[in-house]
Length: 93
Ligand SMILES: [Zn+2]
Image 1 (cartoon, rainbow, N blue to C red):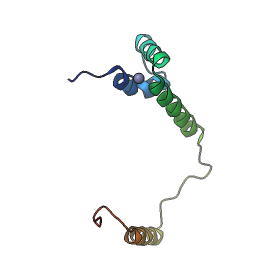
Image 2: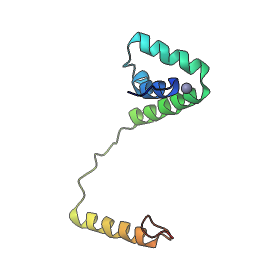
Image 3: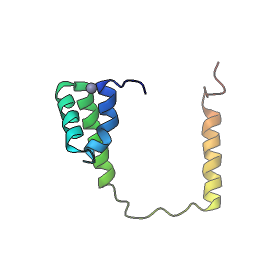
Image 4: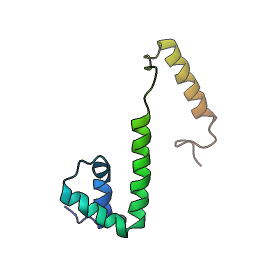
């Protein structure tokens, strides 16, 4: 296994850290790193906000499965969007 830099290790731990799923020792290591690393702190902040938004989001109406005709229409619209793009992954110059 290749050596992870402190930043990579902390990044790997971040979501567990924010979910409070880490053991105390590991969480302390993350906190220690966040005090000295602006980059990881910014990442932690944005991840925390993302998690908060996800947790706050409660759809009031459960989405229904798409009707086949609606699905076909979406598919056509999507194909049209793809075709209209000036540069696509397979159409680049
Ligand atoms: Zn870092």
